Amino acid sequence: MSDTPESTVIPARAGKGWWRRLVWGEWFSHNRLLLWTLVGWLAAVWILPLVAHPLWLLGYGLLFAVIAGPAFGGSDVIHGCEEFAFGSPIPRGDRYLARLLVGGGSLLAISVMDVLALEGNLSDVLLGIFVTSGLPAVQIGQPLLLYGLVLAVPFAVFAIGFALSALAASRSFAMTSWLWGIFGALILLRGTFQLEELQSTRISGMFSVPSLLGVASAVLWVGYRFYRRKEAVASTSSSLLMPASWWIGIAAILAAIAGIALLSSWFVANFARLL
Image: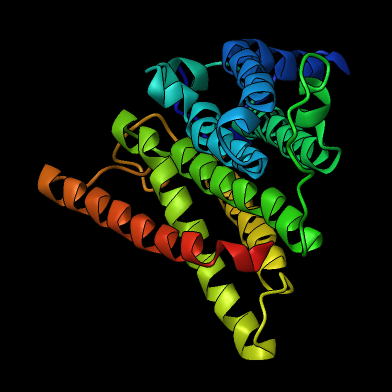
């Protein structure tokens, strides 16, 4: 194992096939997650309209973002193999980008599939093969706002969870990074909605969607910069740890859960304004 920073590591690159093999390795490492995600999406398309409003399908991308952020970003920490991974000749920045490409690309594909399924009334089409469901087509008054949020909110949750878990030095911090992803995205979303209401008394997505995308991109960039200098040692400044006291850690987690609950209640109460 080498404790040398990435800037001094000479990677044993193998021509143009380097990136292809690196991306394929990340895809293979997370193939079960991606397979079950696809199976769950197909089940949601077929079954969800029978028990709930088809619009709930748009939340599937958010569910994937919650799981995939820590799963991709903190995979080495969660599985306890970061020291071994850092001893390989693969630059840490390349590893970070490969995981981001596979995880972020999968999230984008799922979010787009959600939008296309709802826009094309796919659930009713599939159900119509066997039975006439009688479900009306979903009518959306502000499709650009809603679909913009469908893409931006899961991306923000994924980005924060991915970056925090990548920089985590403990399994507990990596596995709870999704909490801070949701909390951060909801705070930003609520704040930008407030600005939009002050500007035009109407939520339009003019500030919220670009802000979510911009902050998420900035978080990923900062995470990349720190990850390149990260060492597999808990005491390094580029690593993130849970507080030394478990009481403080539990209190922080409970505070985040309470904040998420309060913010979520506001969004549920005002959900009709987003349609």
